[in-house]
Image (cartoon, rainbow, N blue to C red; front, top):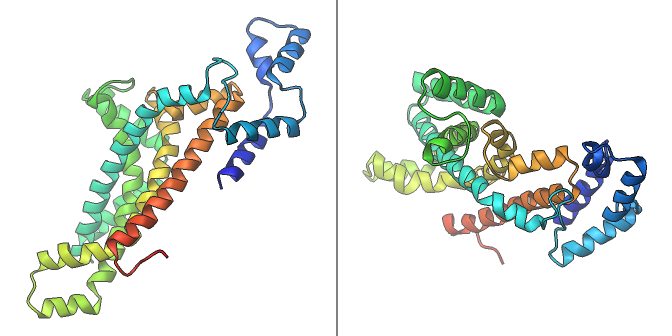
Length: 293
C-alpha cells in the first residue's frame, strides 16, 4: 500500500500545471535560460522514469529527499511540524471519543425519546458540516462575538481548544451513531436477558457486559477517524494559522515542492497502516474469541 501511495503521489504531483523552477525564479524575473539551468540542477529535466527510479531508491534507504525551496531534508522539516499536528489530532480525538461516546450511550439508554432524536440530529449535523464552515462559525462565536478564545495562532491550551473542538465535533457524530447502534444490538442479546434474570443491576450490566461487547465496531471507527483527523488538519491548521504538517502540505503543494509533498503524504499513509494494525491488536484484547495465528 505504501508503495502504491508513493507511486500515485509521484505521478499526480507531476501532472499538476506549473513548474518548480519557474516558481522559484518568478519573483526575480529569471530568464528562460536560468529556468532551464535550474531544472537541470534539480534533476527535473530527466525523464519521469529516471526521476521515479531515483525516488524509489532513496525511499528504500529511508531518504525522503531535500526540499526544493528550503534546501533542508524533508525528514527534518516534517519532524519540526509533526508534534503540533499530533497534539491537535490527539486533542480532537479525545473530544470525539468523550462527546461521541457519551451521546451514543445516552441515546441508547433513552431509545425512542426526544433525547434519542436530539442526539441523532446532532450526529447528522456533525457529519454533514464541512470543517472549514464550522471552524469559521466557531471563530465568529467564541472569538469575535464572545471574546473567550484567540481566533488564530500557536500557543497553549486556549489556542488549541477551538481547532480541537472543530475536528472533534466532525468525528463525534460518527462515533455517537455507532455507539448507539452497537449498544442497542448488545442490550437485546440473550446473554443480557439472562444477566437481568439473575438480578444484576443495570449499571453492572452496562459497564461490565454491554460496553465491552459493543466496543469492537467502535474501535474500528475510532482508528479510521484518527486518520480522518490527520487529514482534517490540512484545513484546520490553515484556517487557525497553526503550525503543523497540514499547513505545511498546503504550502508545499502551492510551491510544487515535490519531495516535501511526497514525504507528507507517505507519512499519512504510514499512519493509516499503523492504525489499522493497532485496531486488529485491540480486537484480540477486547474479545478473547479473536485470535491471529
